[in-house]
Image 1 (spheres, rainbow, N blue to C red):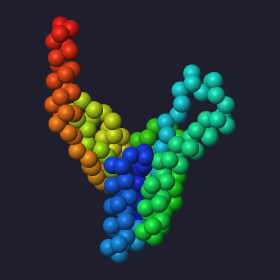
Image 2 (cartoon, rainbow, N blue to C red; image 1 turned 120 degrees about the horizontal axis):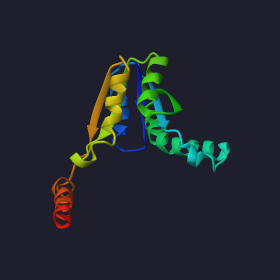
Image 3 (spheres, rainbow, N blue to C red; image 1 turned 90 degrees about the vertical axis):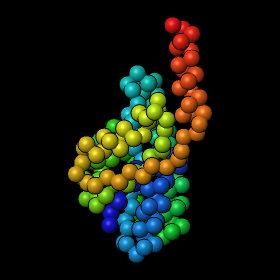
Length: 163
């Protein structure tokens, strides 16, 4: 079973790696594709940097995002390949899954309060819109009382004072 695992360096993203390890321990032949996608730099930024420095920065970010997953897959003897792509994350994840003839895309996302929902789940939604490969989304983490009630109440209080 070939599984694409998009990684961004966050601990919720590692949930997908744990899922692949669990499948492998259950006797399923898993081939993981650990994928890190970076957006392109805006031209106004890239005009002031050399291509070599941008490539070095991307390589450093990819290594940081992929290394925990690589360590976990290696420790558990799961067959894998690590890839780095450049472009729109949802588009590149879907394209890699199609190109590699993946059986499944497994994404780990974090739970965010309502005012932060645009962070990671939007990428998962974008991937589902762009591919016919099955996508499994694993939510991890929790929202504390301060984030759930305190921050929105504080924002509402500031808005009321300003009004």
